[in-house]
Length: 355
Image 1 (cartoon, rainbow, N blue to C red):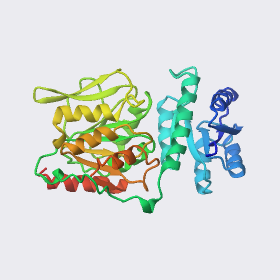
Image 2: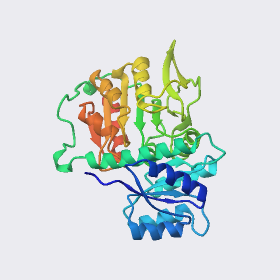
Image 3: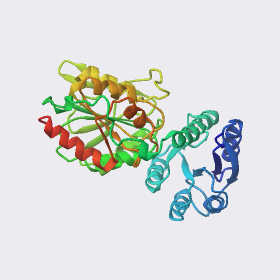
Image 4: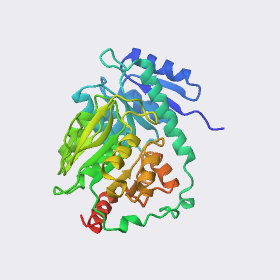
């Protein structure tokens, strides 16, 4: 029998600590073992208790969350850190800094100013903790897993059919991985790129702006009716499904509040299926990257089976080898690569297809 994941909650608000602690304690598969209110408490409890997870606020007196996180990483303490983030530009910037420092994920902080109820936030937090724990348990021993899938090898990427669009799907661990990807894309990149990163509303605009500041191409949060341009990357906004639809010779971004797919809005599955409809699978290059669950894995396998090029981030560089693992196991991936090799391989494949 697997032991319950242990959790420490650090926030200077007694109300927030109580809300999250009470809600998680009701989830019988999670054990809250301590709480604290400063970064100093965080380091002390991390050293003493070595919890599986620390839920950590960013803004705190005495020592803030970013300083505490940096110290935890410096001391090589084993806890996975999930940040509590406020829905402001400053909060978003600090959140992305935390992910760069090694936090595995973040959730919106319970407050009167956001649209998330404390129950919703606690439910999301418990799903992340349980999903992350489960993904670590189900991963087989590395030596038992081939680096590349041997079955259903897709030979069609060798055909001289031009790639017209790039689709990328990612979740937990994605913000940092996508920074690596976008930093490597050359300024003259000749294709549009469409990205679903599972992220709540209020954060995707700041995330797109951050990627834009690091990238040589233009990166923006997608807007309803955007006319698709080459050399531009479109980030699906939180709480919207994003599709690419054909209108005459043009492609247009379509955003809707339609139902969640695989528990997500935006969903990778929805985006990838729309790209197949709009461009044709054999004109696509699609990547599936780090993240828990299975969103996008069936859609990318469909792209593979219809002649598109498919890449997956490997386990060693994934925060969670989940969606990408499922896609590999389904036989839907041509190349399984470390995150830093995805863009060089993409460019190599585009050249081989006459782009």
